[in-house]
Length: 313
Ligand code: SF4
Image (spheres, rainbow, N blue to C red):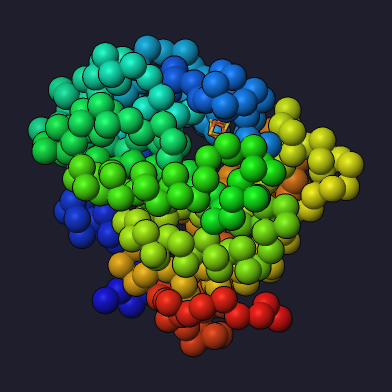
């Protein structure tokens, strides 16, 4: 058992792979059913036009070149480092089988020594059997992580924020992915409109029940060129202050299962893209405050596992 009150990613990666491991974010040029019209146009209300991507991905390099350059960048900092090839933007399994096969090929030259894991971000409703089959084949040779956006365990809220999938879609995708030999990382946002503190607890309970292997969580951020920006400017939505976020995050972690790895505890977005919160609190500060909060409560990850819904003070 870790001495930390939660399962932190870095020690887990060091113990699992025997060295430091860094992510290389990749843009495979996919799209998303919430943008191409098959489910909706305009995307989830908080998603900017880059598809929840990363500014580093705007380079326009071909995929193999992105990976090669990313690995070079990592190795300049740490020549012994391993790499997680992270297909980040949009829904990476929302493509033809032949395209997914082509995309996955780019990691092949690095599987023996450099790429320790392949991580694929996608939606729970864009995971057809043929994609799982390809990923399952790859998972025979390298750990494959599927990052599934749930965001909140509430169908009415998922409809309101225009996710256009259900909680059941998520649970089913977790089950099918794990049956295919993949590891699943669930994604949550705390502070979505109307979700509240009980929503944070509910989402953690759902993650514990579905048995996802890891969790990424962050506070709601309002980015430019999103539908959320309009709601924010109209006063229809607010963001959490740091104290409240850490308080709810502690609630969330207490309700996860003890083995689930916390891959992320906070969000970040470039200052010129972010409208709220106005001050970006660094991940290390969130972590420090969280440790203090859990210590103050004398609690830890999983200590409220299985606890049913309680009135929120
Ligand atoms: S599913 Fe992902 S990429 Fe698509 S609109 Fe929503 S957040 Fe953006």
